[in-house]
Length: 142
Image 1 (spheres, rainbow, N blue to C red):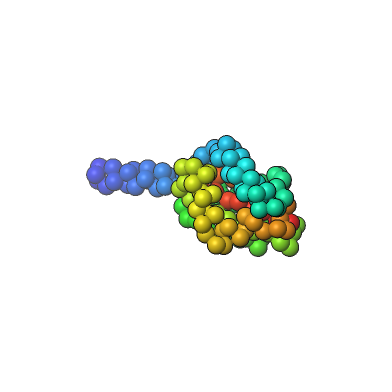
Image 2: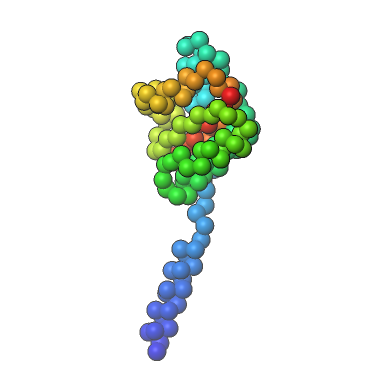
């Protein structure tokens, strides 16, 4: 009887540990700032306007990076919903994971046809960038 009680208590303890929500790391604002500086420099070198930070897009990017961190999976899930919340009919998004440096992430986005096209989209003017636990979202709209 005593061993059954010990096993039962161990199972309850394990279940309690598993039920704990995943704590989000603090957002790395320096990472986001450096990445935006690099993207804007790249855009200006290609004759395009620099992007201005938009707090709404920043919050949407932060929520998406946090969601990817919690799920431990990189994705573009709910992109249309983010676009609707942004109030724009033209938005683009790049996501990344596990880059220690924003410059390394930028270099890989630059080498990727689709990601590069998003960074150089002429019509976009506003941006939100967030990095949470090495999950990065670049979300930009007209």
